[in-house]
Length: 156
Image 1 (tube, rainbow, N blue to C red):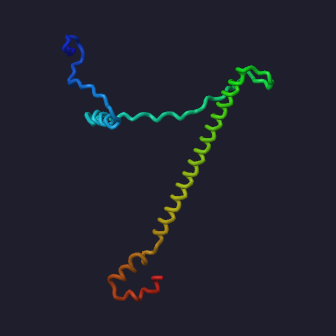
Image 2 (cartoon, rainbow, N blue to C red):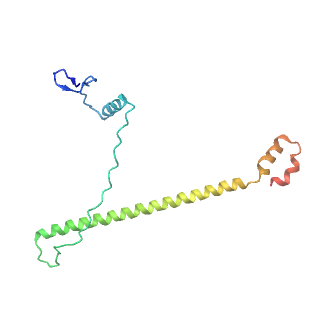
Image 3 (tube, helix red, strand yellow):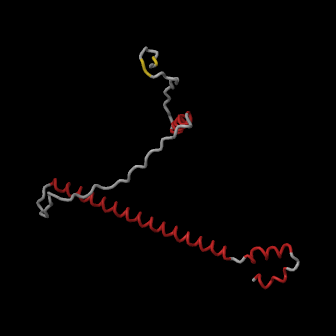
């Protein structure tokens, strides 16, 4: 059976009391209100917005019907068409340059990571190859044995 509201209309019964409308006057107050709203129900996951897509220029047309001529008597409207085409082409070239630069930086970063990993592996292998004698026996002889002077040739 549907619950009846105070007005006598069927619908969901509101188990919550109505919240007063609060208008934030400062950015700090707005942030505080958002945090309070999130903390009312801590089990509910917080909304995480999707990353906006990267801007790409419009693809150049595959077939151009109006090819501009090189005559000096072009109309005044043709200049604006030329100017917009030129601006779009410059944006497209700038976008391609930025993408190639980003790819180059990513490759350099991956190469640097690989070099660092290789260096770390070499250090680890060097520590593993270190003789057991130099790490344990010499330290043990120095602190516990009175005859550690006999080990002096090995300490070099």
